[in-house]
Length: 216
Figure 1 (cartoon, rainbow, N blue to C red):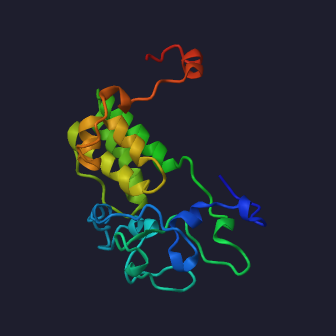
Figure 2: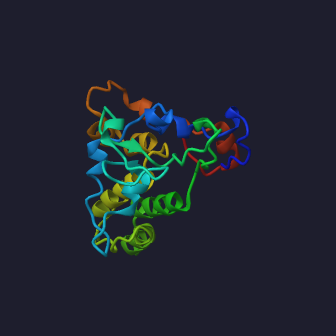
Figure 3: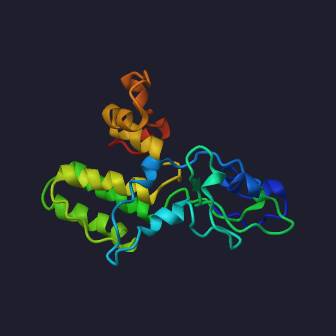
């Protein structure tokens, strides 16, 4: 979703405001947790940090926008802020006049969905086919090919890759719901008090009418 006309406050991408620090006129909603940062323990093949970490968040001592250095004091909650939707401030424009596009779906998301579908269906060569799709995402990030070689271990890799690759793109909650009560509670806590049907959304009737193979 591209914002090609940001001449008025109401025409830009407001995510820039949601996640920017207060010194830049932002609200700094949804501060990344230490748990999220710790998910990026794996180094690249050249022994560097996973580049998706600093593409996704701001952290102490790392370059920020407008030739500044990020300060953990900007995020009282966790010491981290979302970087993904921020950009340099431009004189005369409000933060809400950002032209940073919102990606409703990306190729990496498609690859990981395909990998998950192949892995869950199983069958001949499912492991190698799943790994091949996952490795397309990992290679782009500079990581080595996954060594996972079973359905269970690949499931873990896929879920971790989705978390890192698609961080703060508004997929995580729905992934957790889709993966079920046990996985959701492990990530969100056990005091949710949700009944099992609330982990699912109904298939739209229009989709059922279009594709007769779909089952409720």
